Image (cartoon, rainbow, N blue to C red; front, side, top):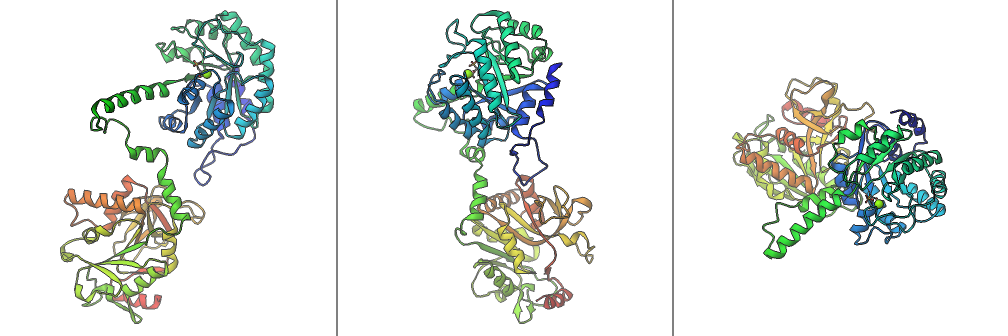
Length: 557
Ligand code: SPV
Ligand code: MG
């Protein structure tokens, strides 16, 4: 694309604050660089209109690499005309919501720059400071009129407008900030030659790209412009009126970027009108529910889950955390239930309850089964799995399903662990977190099947600093890079996680699997639907299933 490739050299800018979540993944380019590339390099790219944080998010989720903060639609969404009725600082406020809501770059429609070179200077500085990656200014006079209103709109003098462009470039706070110069020569009926003359002057003044606008219903004058322009600088177009032109035509014409300038606002107007009319008519909601976005969808779009996570990290524990201990099986440690095995004067289950109490978990529910009458530690709420001999762990857990609300830890009844493991599990981020011993990667075990954990990426060697992988599955046959460690039989669920847990138990029940399912299966199925985080540590726990285990446990304490 001729000169367009040359403009890549301009991208050697200082790195601006990355938009990435800093803790994850390799560093990506700043929004400034991404927008510059989007607007100035092949292949043809597309900017979607957005007018607030929510529409910005929706456009980003649809896959658009950059957004057009339209003057028309931001004004209209505020109930105002596209005539600079909203002040530029009011527009700036809207832009801030948009930038905060997404990680793709925003090109703002800066109209005329809200005045002369001096207002442009301040505008561009403030845009950059708030993370808006570029501005488009048009060669009209303040206050502007929308391009599709009236005929023969007066244009700015070329020299004066070039001063606005130079002022913009001199004021950018990031080298990769993009200034698009828009000529309204065709809109005002001045013809192609005037458009070319202006585009050339704006290019020489330092504009990074030229936006050529047309209100014709076909792309004829745009294509004549691009042909005669010969890609002296990247070209951006807004095919609102010549919407029927195939996009391939723009590719062939060497256009750099297409702006779909107002289509999210227009579609929302149609949808809102239909819903308002229906509800008004019916005086009821039954006809619209199911056809409109769910309230849950609103929560997702506004990242409510992140807030729940943050609340858990920053607020004092709301409501008591509960532990559910699965202690229904007999094990091989003698005639008594294995949870009652004596470890230096205190039963295994009593030691577990002490560990929970040390981490502030005082509400303990125990699901008992084998010789249940003997399992009745003071201070615990008791549930029974009377079918312990022919059912699995999930069936036991399901007996205490009424307690799977709010924050809850599910624990196997036959494990001993150092208190810091539980404390770490309780503090780890995520709605579902499982305790994983990474030492299992280096040991072959003792031949007994183990609950081995496969992560979604290899566990980094310096796993203390790296975010841990997420769970893919728990099974006995995990090996190689997938193997993150061994699940020790401890899992924490946040309020949302506990709800997901209940939903999965219900699904197992509906599928007729509730009696046979074990915890690894349950967690693996959960991981297919929701993030299940690994809390990784090394050693300092053991499970007690056999007499030799018992001896080891006595040494452990
Ligand atoms: C806008 O979206 O505000 C534009 C494009 O400037 S247009 O409405 O076509 O002028
Ligand atoms: Mg506009």
